[in-house]
Length: 356
Image 1 (cartoon, rainbow, N blue to C red):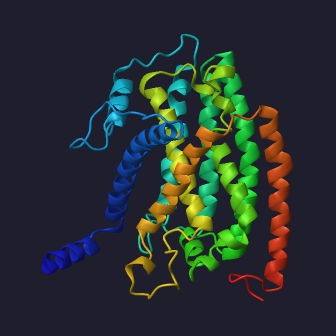
Image 2 (spheres, rainbow, N blue to C red):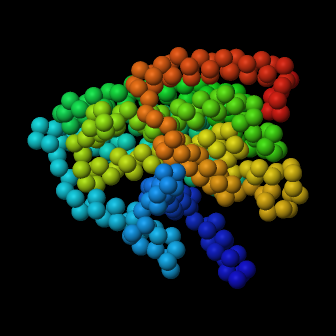
Image 3 (cartoon, rainbow, N blue to C red):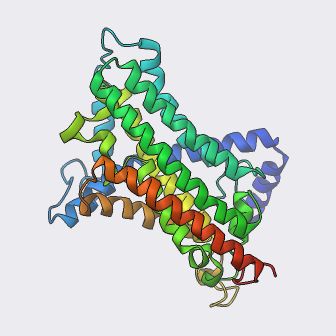
């Protein structure tokens, strides 16, 4: 077995870099699609438990366990066989392009995501700028969907969503300025390594206000409850995607759930040490619990992803004026104040990551 593994590793090393990258792109893409599918099931289960009901439990099980495990596949089949209806007066080209414009950035950002100490598809030095630029592109899909539908309800929903995303993108960007100041780099892998040394060195401790702002802005960026006024069924009949059906409708929700997973992963990378172990420095270096790896990134990602569902089941929807006030008058001033505080901490040598 060892000989086979050595030969496989030697063969892998001889492959051109573009083939290795293509392989990992396919693996990450398939894993993301499956993760989105099962995230929908997990959300319905979590909300069911919070509301004292069972959630999906009819479609499939494995030896009597995990009832409802095949519900995501049933949902996909249902949406695939439904007709995609394009309104007569819609801009048919933009109407079809909009879901893809929303979905592609949510997948493309994973190219620079450090999955473990030795695995990143594209180790880009300006990876953080790449992330910020692509997260800004997603709003164009929402605007195109609302405008191309030629419906006042869809257009109103897209305008509300665009204004909300722009407001919270500024707060999110300022929060990441603090992360760059702390790490001294724009490379996501180096940002994780800058937090090495145990939980006390994670940016969560020294940048806690920025962490809270980033998390709130991430929920608002993904149009999730309690910031889901762009899709408020009781107000504007589902907002920008009201005219979509079938697989085109599914692509918007695929993008939404992919963005939830992405924001959860980025929060773990920027503030909780990514793939670093929380037991680093507390246990012996050869202890499996102290070793870094993808499993730690997954645990942190899964925790934040569950929080998204917890918020949906707990908080009522905000009014739109409350959302705008929170973004412009609360979160942005908090980030600016804490960046100034952090600058003083760096200047006076406070914190494990700073330099005198």
